[in-house]
Amino acid sequence: MILLTVGTQLPFDRLVRAIDAWCAEQGTETVFGQIADPGAGGYRPAHFEWASFVDPERFDALFAEARVIVGHAGMGTIIGGLTAGKPVVIMPRRAALGEHRNDHQWATAMQFRDRALLHVATDETELPAAIEAALAAAPEAQGAARTPGHAEEGLIAALSAFIHRGELPDAADVSADRPAADPTSQETGSTRHADS
Image (cartoon, rainbow, N blue to C red; front, side, top):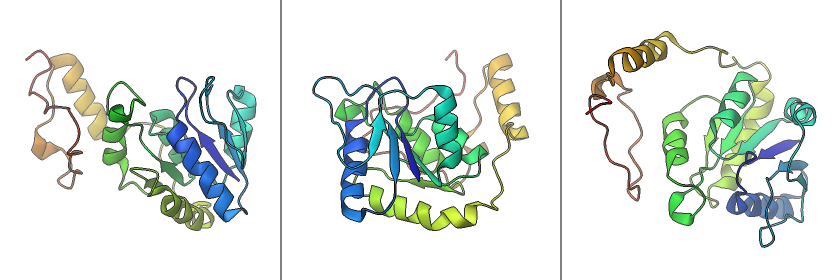
């Protein structure tokens, strides 16, 4: 089973519609979607079972049952899936499409895209291939190393330096193969100090 989750704050019709189309085409994989309230004019899928909201106990059971997690690029989805050792497919919401207030989900997806078990679809055209790759990885993921439930020492040190001294890491301290920024993004580069 595939669990689709878009969080509880906002619907994500573009992702839900793409999953519905994929279900209609492939027809064999069971999908359950927690899709938030689609509102009066929002998209309601026809090819998989869904609910606007799922209580925490049921969500945990669905999450445990799922072979693959598909969702927006929310940290809860990413951390939950990786901590559980499950393949995760994420498709970021885009501010330019009115799906969120900024492109922080795009930045999150680009930062995590090379992580084991994480499959990024930058848009709905890439989603079917990302789902197929995650499904192919699902049997292997059963013995996969899970992401630890605690932060790495480097992250803790960087956060501490920022909180206590307002220091941001030098570009050289950040991964050399960091993904390029989205050329359509309106975001600007960071400064050396938070108070600058």
